[in-house]
Length: 137
Image (cartoon, rainbow, N blue to C red; front, side):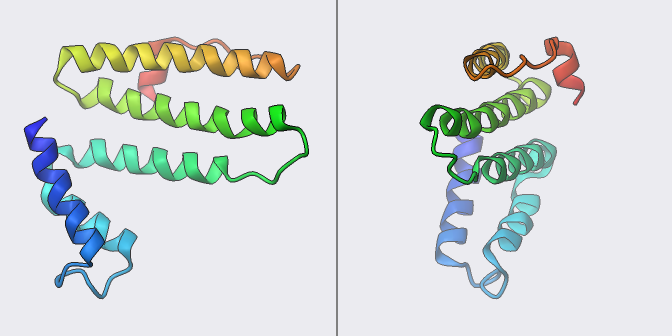
């Protein structure tokens, strides 16, 4: 936890202020360069999370359909998929067994909620998957 805070705070400050070293770079490029310098062995974890966040945010950007329930599900399903992807990264790279267990629970819970939302909208449920299959992705 302390290592995460020690990495996150300088990164957040540098991105917010624009940091002299990275000031001429677009924020996302500066963030990527700083992340590779600051994280070392955390780089694969951070890269997976960054990718999951970008995919989630893009997929949540929907055009309103006029149906609140459909729009809610259209935004929440990618949000839950993002949570699953981030939890998978924790299970793969995390060292704290309590957090890894929580991440496994997130994977199962979010999959179940996706299935319920799809069923509520008369959509077929997603294909069944196992945690092991999710971790290979």
